[in-house]
Length: 294
Length: 294
Image 1 (cartoon, each protein chain N blue to C red):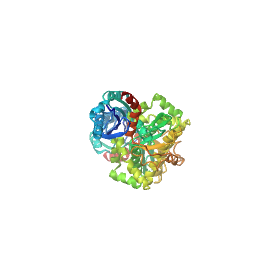
Image 2 (image 1 turned 90 degrees about the vertical axis):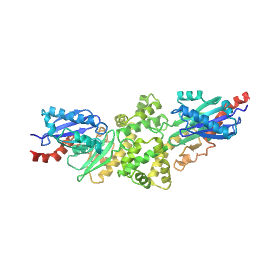
Image 3 (image 1 turned 45 degrees about the vertical axis):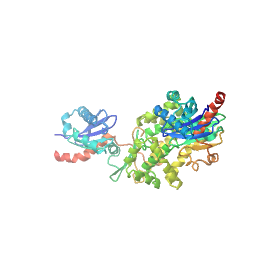
Image 4 (image 1 turned 120 degrees about the vertical axis):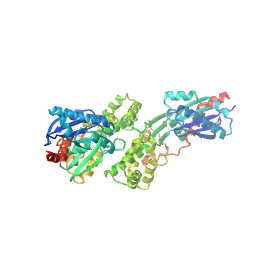
């Protein structure tokens, strides 16, 4: 009997799975709905199983193979003991490790090499590996953390729009576009912000980069501030000796021209995505044991 | 029959009242519980009447005089039409005007003169009078406004503490005091911040000033940033020709040494408090008509 390896990348909006042969070569991928093991573990379990079935089906494999498969899952909020335990007991696999989404992203981007992964999305977190030691930096969430994230950039944009409305700071085309959106009524803007979750702020971030690239002065100022916070985190990690940086997440492709040139020089293309990383970890952890079984 | 003048300063934590004779001279003051006409108009009405009764009692006046009194009330959130209407119909006075807490503070601090009042408390708002025109600047609340406020200073302190915990920014005695308070566990700090209302953040602000005055480097940096936002608002208002600045609110006494010297030179002691301002407005508005009645 072939024992398959499964990689899972479980996120708040979707769950992706990859099935690989015993050599770690990916045979097919599958996708399903959200898999947030903290806020909704039962739906997460359903979608983890669902995405895996899609992948097995895509690969033309008998789904009975899922029960003997070995898996590594990367999930947000993995370090909250109780939820992990609940999910781990109910997974459809013979054996599985639950890791952070950051770790599988690191593995996917860097393989077994040393380096830094900056995940720049709605939030920000930095994961670095230096001589086998993996360190997490940042990632404390929107309220008092995640500097440089899409949510913080969007928040700064709305704050800047109010300062411009009051005449304290300058207006720019970017600011005008925001004020127009709120019918030039600061109370509408404030009400939106009071209700907004990080994702709602974050949806403004691509617009800030778009205007920034066209030379909008306010956009450029907001992005320089955001980039400074990214550079400060990278300085800390680079000082430890890591000389390779991958920028991931939705804002990863936007950031290179804004960060300091000392970091631009260290940028590298990620080798693979998070799902590739999860499969690679499954191979490393369960591959040898599997040979023993075979 | 003497027609008395009443001034009311209604706030979220308490309601203060002053009763004055027809000449505007304050006879006595009284205090009662919260008077937030937006969130709880009926309790506000009770406490407005209550504080007025205490003042009449203190002055040795017959409380029947309340029904013929003329009043000016300064309240937070006065510009929300419906709540004002509801309260105005149910006040115990013969006639009353409801104004913003900012306007009575301005009147109290400056009398009839031109100038700027910066109310620096849990939030921040600037009110200026120039050639009889009163302008409000800022005051948009904690979420995307109130720069330089106690809530924003406290928020910045917690954010700075996380950056120091991660090793991205420097630790200082101030930062150590915060990290110790949260048992050096960033998750405790983040959880506190997620639940915190502006007032809970604001309670850290006096500590930042205290450490800043003793030369704590992080405190000084946070206060310089906060003072820049206050200076930027003052620059706008001073440019219009107003040459007198009163700093009010809980942080008013802390700020003078941190703002720019160009503004330090324009600082003036407030002539009176908000309650004095409310009585002065009542005299100006109802004094003449009262003479006609008498």
